[in-house]
Image 1 (cartoon, rainbow, N blue to C red):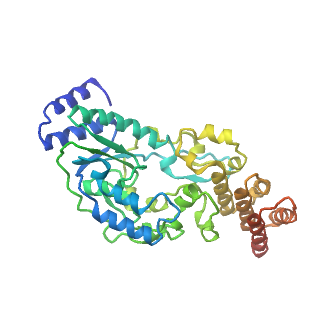
Image 2 (image 1 turned 30 degrees about the vertical axis):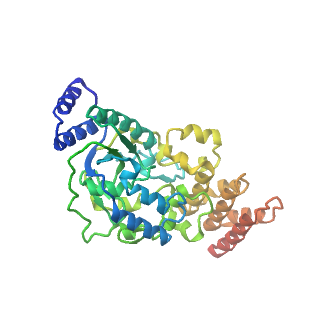
Image 3 (image 1 turned 60 degrees about the horizontal axis):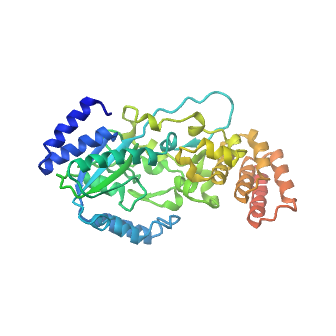
Length: 399
């Protein structure tokens, strides 16, 4: 990535970057050298269409559960010159995170699933390092002011990338690229450099809507429209509380995120080279964790295993809540002893979802564990007691 030959070529391009077109070529070369698979450029004008769409969806409640995602934030993000006064261009960037799935041993363990993007290193850290490298290159081109973001800043990543021609909107609301499908992390750099812009791609999903029925919780409520309140990724990551009963069965065995709509997309079925090794599964447990082991994991173990992973965002109690749901959905009664022990977990959030899972599994052992918990005077949490009661009814119905 930083061979003398590459540096020499980049240096020669920079030396000749006297026009907007030449500077754009130089910036794209610098982006590739910094470790980005995709780079495209758009102007720093307002993203008025995106601002209108985001505001309407916030008002409709489709972004509920993300209190930080406000109209004020969207308004600022869609007006680049408010973020960086004097901005003239935005560099849209993409990094592929597609890597082959690790082999799962036939060890009999009941395992959950983690979204592909979280298998390896936390992409924020990896991409931030590459952005710093690119920013140094922008300075060498004469850029005096620049701001860079991964996905935590106000700019709407997908809207910027679409206008720059990096990709097009998929009906699952992810950005699709010709070369890497939707398996890409997005980032952007706002700069005061005058760069020749790229044109948006003349591509779309056409009549394909394979992603919409692929979502078991019905989160894609219309083409290009996602209801955050129904999304498996939202509930297994961002939701810190109780997962509504109506969505638990649809979550299946996902314990962090979800890839179902992306897996259904024909663009993602095209053969592609593996993405960056930084995003390959750090271990089997990062991609297909043993659910019983998750239920007894300590905070120290959680911090150690996931210290370089995006999975930390879920919190240990959240991950154990998700493990309970996954065990209930797998339908294997070997999980009953582990879930019965989880009825005595320190966190009410875990106890309540363990009760639901036992009710879903049913059987004599599950009913006995629930009955014992129902009669336990030490259980004083009203919500947990309600979950136990509902689970007993469910278990009786299953019988």
